Length: 124
Image (cartoon, rainbow, N blue to C red; front, side, top):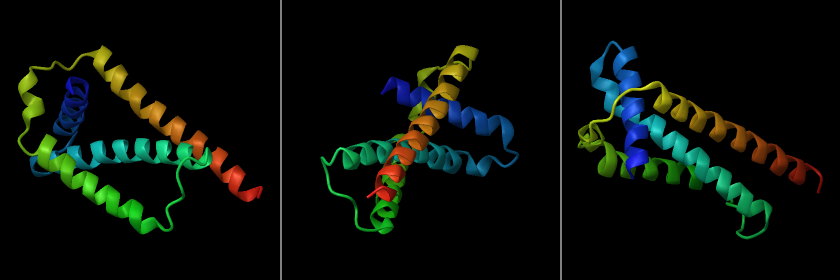
């Protein structure tokens, strides 16, 4: 949980340093962290579908529903109270590289699994 709190802290501080309007810091932190979690969950989901462990979701509305639910839960329990700011984290280069590597790894895995899954679907 400490790693996720650090992740939230770094996203929050990034937007605090770059955004002119401070009203949307919490919203931006919530949306970005939820998107990263959702992309990772979709990657795992498509791995399980590819291996035929679970059935495929019939339409995109289930994914949208899960994304909205995940965003609301993430906001309510992790971000709303700003508890991640109480850990006395520091902005350092090592942590920044770690967060960037998480983003890059997430994108690479998602694209790789999507290409494998797409090749399987079109080669039926």
